[in-house]
Amino acid sequence: MKTIIKIVLALLLVALVVSCKDKADSTDDKVTVQETENNNSAEKKGQAFISDDVSPPNVLDVAMDSKDHTTLVAAVQAADLENALVNAGPLMVFAPTNKAFDALPEGTVTDLLKPENKAKLAYILKHHVTPGNYNKEFLKKFKKLGQASDQNVAISVKGDDVYVGGAKIIASISASNGIIHVVDKVIVPEE
Image (cartoon, rainbow, N blue to C red; front, side):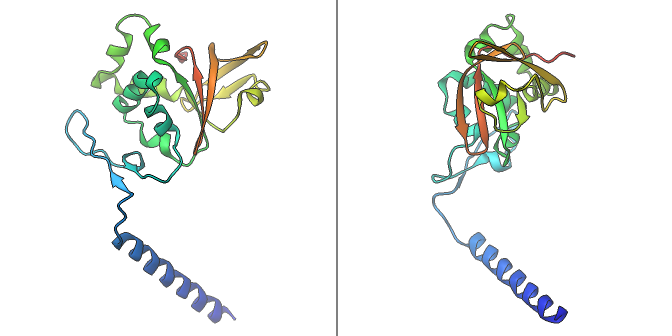
């Protein structure tokens, strides 16, 4: 009996390898690699730089298509966090608007986007991400959330409004790998 199971498993493995090879050898004009350069002209690699015309948009796709989140996208790119936002998730992203970034002290965003501040920028951005896919109503049940920055952020409710780290959720958008809660403030981590 064990021999039969081993043979069946071997045949399945061979079929899987052949199937994968056939897929790798085929050309699908719907899948393209985006040619993106960073500051040192090295090619960026990973899931974030592969696009297709048939998959539903993930968290990064939604942010990149939003005219209200261009500063956030620039920050994500400067911190090289694109691949983190396209993983399977589920991810819950609290996405500050451009106006939220504009409300920071003058020069803050420009300073954070400098290559020498990449680690600090990444830490701040990770403070806006947590595992899960909770809608605004469900978040009302929480007192705090653990963020990817390894810090907790307080949740408060005032009437129908939900605040995360003092930032008000003003909209929510579903994505294939989670949910984006648009917030009116940058959530600055306590250090």
